[in-house]
Length: 162
Image 1: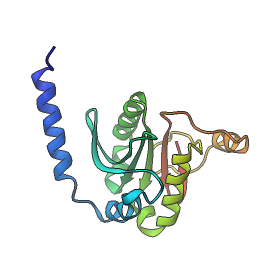
Image 2: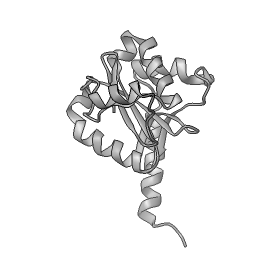
Image 3: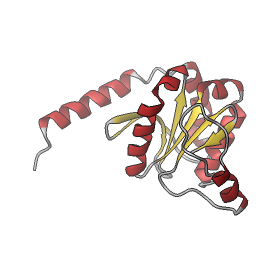
Image 4: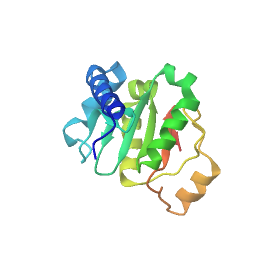
């Protein structure tokens, strides 16, 4: 059975757009300098097409997506939440880092990625720009709990949440 022509055209368009988007923002370049070459012990890829989306960074083996959100994303919280939910359905965990955090506190951003890679941390899904850990995170972390596949995490101002 052949694929639908519109799906093939859309897929080709997404692949082309991902190639064009490979010129990183300053914050993406800064983070990539630490993710490239398995520096965190796992392979990452940049500007990867997953379904109908292009993600900033993907660690395929642990199925972890890392997104670097600039000011533009503050106005797109509903769109980003739908996108994250769809990626979760596809079996990916999504970690959102604010660009400002990556630029000012790269070590903190990398710590959050390392925790996500280990499967640690559980936060509330209040969307990008809301960085107060919820009580559920505090209870889960205190009990040594870990997130399930598909959890969505957002980090800003040095703190994280799902």
